[in-house]
Length: 289
Image 1: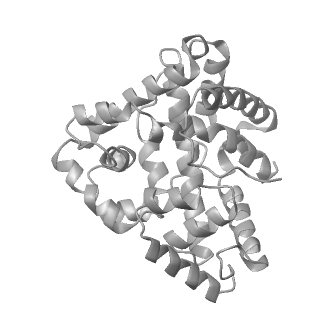
Image 2: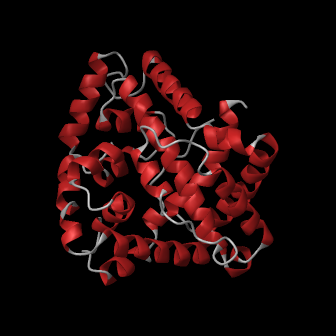
């Protein structure tokens, strides 16, 4: 299987996972179990499958967040709520958010259940070695696709995302890009967060952002204005190709025919979610060309 086949499927499947981070339902659910309103729910809920881990573990596995932002919420979250309670709240957020952006008819549809079953059938195909965030999620009991197919699909999409994500960190380390440099070069491709959102959301200061630009410029990866040079574009291309190869195992296990079917189903579901406001405006750049 061509690694780009896996990337295409991941590209349309991943928004069904990542919309949970922007769901307005999140604050009330996380506050109800004891967390503080705001960013604490994100850090605690994504880290919860690993247990009551410290800030260094979250920084290592999340990679591109500023340490000051992480330290505001971890490990303080675990004094307010257990990882188990936080993760249960996360699933309630998923249930509500997907029902809102997909609609009840689509949530109950044969197409969504088929997508869930296809995604679940390949989500454990990759091994846990050197993939800590994936491994922690892979040990959780999956939702039953016959009972909550939309939550089951989200769980499978999460496993596939975190499997690919752990591999992506390997590629970034090989490329000698630290967390903020990885974030900077990704925004410079025009296909990630817009820079203004990335700086604040990931907990960096403008000064740190500019210092990262200067380090990258010294390596010849960006110009003085922060635009990628030919060398920078080549480095990002190699990072993405390495990530594709390292993230291929679930789709290779699924096979070409079923991967194509999952891609089609996920594209339909994601298109509906996007049309119904799954993400707020001003977050992602619009690719040109």
